[in-house]
Length: 69
Image (cartoon, rainbow, N blue to C red):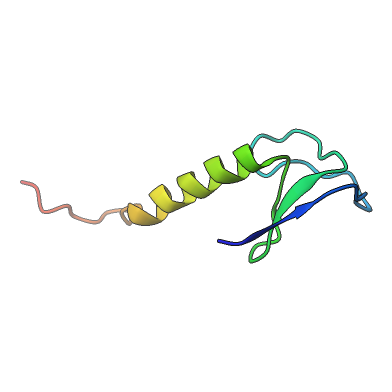
C-alpha cells in the first residue's frame, strides 16, 4: 500500500484516525488507494499489518464445511 505524509494542512471537516479514532491534527497520513486517514505512521503500519493478516485468512462462509468430521 502507498501513503502520503501531510504536514501543516487543515481538513475541511473534523476527521478521525481510521485505526485509533483520535482526532486528526494538522499532520497526518493518507492512504492513496482507500483515502483513509491515520494520525501517524504507527497507526498506519498497525492497520496495514492487520489488513494483511485479514486478507491472508479470509472468513469462512456461513454454513461452509471445514472438512473436519
